[in-house]
Amino acid sequence: MSSLFDLSGRVALVTGGNGGIGRGIALGLAGAGADLVILGRDEAKNAAVVEEARALGRRAIGVACDVRERGQIEAAFAIAESEFGRLDILVNNAGIAAGGRPEEIPAETWDAVLGTNLTAMFHACQVAYPFLAASEHGKVINIGSEYSLFGAAGVLPYSASKGGVVQLTKSLAVAWARDGIQVNCIVPGWIRTEMTAGVQANERSYTRIIERTPARRFGEPEELAGAAVFLASEASDFVTGVVLPVDGGYAAG
Image: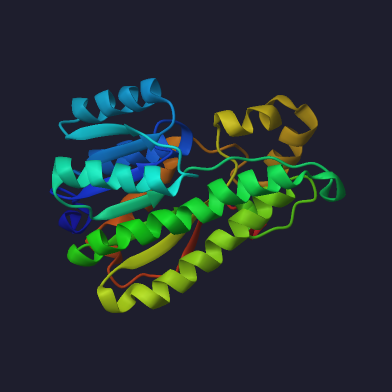
């Protein structure tokens, strides 16, 4: 049974893989045997995760990339192909959050959030398609959010973008099933990351979240790794178009 989850010989590219949830997933995939391509704007943070992956015995490279630029995505995939000669797993994790009152949100804020969280994900999937179709193990894992499922008055652009991630996932799953590519979405709950630091510091918000979460705590980035390894492995070959919450029961409450 353990061989179903073995990623040895596979290559995974993780956008936003140099911190938080992206790092937790990347190192989880490396622990299961995958070699890594880490995409992120911060080269120093990329290098740190690369070293952690290499310490696990994996081959790994970091590529500086702003996913809002299609050309940079294409260049990053070209580097990955040059280094590894293949790509089997794409994890679309890069994201930003911003908000405010809906009637006051500047157009540039909307464009930045949708461009990073949704449009860039679509571009990465398009660029990855020929590599994944050529692989016998093509997998796409898109990272959504609890706000993929619930409305949020204070972070409308983020919520809208993450809702779009779910529909992007389902549509690609239907379109690419004939190519042997599985496309699924992980919906993290409240995870301890830099992005949620402000919420954690706000006693009222933090308490409200803990009371709503059956597990009565925030999750850790590493707790996304199990779901990611499953969705990246042969164990999920008949699983596609799925939206999987990893949230301590938040969505069930």
